[in-house]
Length: 254
Image (tube, rainbow, N blue to C red; front, top):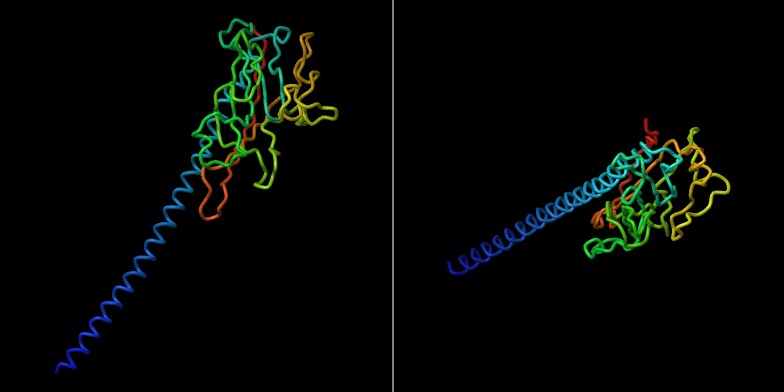
């Protein structure tokens, strides 16, 4: 009887080990599924945040650029003062007095100086921010200097892919009446502000104070941004591309 009891005890012990092993495998599988689901959910949140970030920047830019030059005669102030691939400077008659004074010239530009530790944390070091700078008495042209102005969008890459060494997707493209990109015309020069703002629309196409109107009919805006963290599944930053076409009103006062 003692031998039989010993064998029965051994079987019970093996059954317990088997049950524990099965529970461990099942628990591991459930945990793995939970982790994958949570990572997918987080990646979705990151992608939604990146999309909202890009749209918020474009919405603000669109509202202001659409009103560029409105209510001011071109002899007094051109609608768009500088039109380059990675920055635009334009006039905005905020108080409706048909004159352009301090606080009524606005510049949007791409900047590598993120200037905020929170933005730097956990991000691709090649990211840029979209900045908005308003003119002052000391800086009447709202000069696009690194680290100046407010950040309106972050995580901007403007790259076609992760291997692109520098931004190769223009933030702005300025279209003439025939749809041609004015900044790409033969002889177009680099932005006079330097840095990396790219090719710029010529002074002739911008217009002048003698009555020559601006040839810019619309501005195509393309924002390419990325998620704050890499997607665990692909080990890469998810990319979002948001586009808009803006037509400045640029009407003279009545």
